[in-house]
Image 1 (cartoon, rainbow, N blue to C red):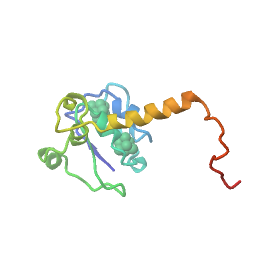
Image 2: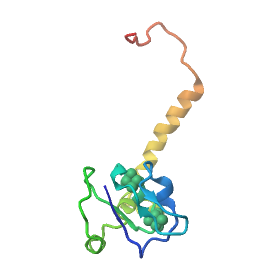
Image 3: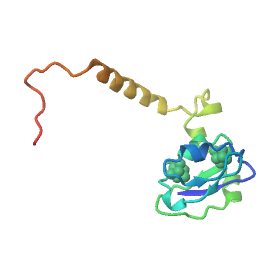
Length: 131
Ligand code: SF4
Ligand code: SF4
């Protein structure tokens, strides 16, 4: 669940407002967003992944806000951990943090290629489904 935005780190880029799938954040462009609807958080970590300022912290418990203390969380090196562990941005060249998201790309490529080929020729041995 979304825990906090560190106001002094936030560059007011607005990316978290844009990427959050459930509209948790609110705020005018150029301002530090507000956590307007924490109850809508799906704990998807997208905001953490996309925040290049490492200003957002999402707690691991999807069931509710745990009340992480911002100073303690920052001192523990947890800010930016999600982005680092996924090898995003400046971590992309660091072999300790492979970007496993790229592995998914072959899945998407194969799916696209199947779609572009159109339906396979009928052989008579296709799966049958209950109607
Ligand atoms: S993505 Fe990070 S830096 Fe950008 S507005 Fe959101 S909290 Fe601030
Ligand atoms: S963890 Fe996902 S749902 Fe929750 S605030 Fe961040 S982007 Fe939105």
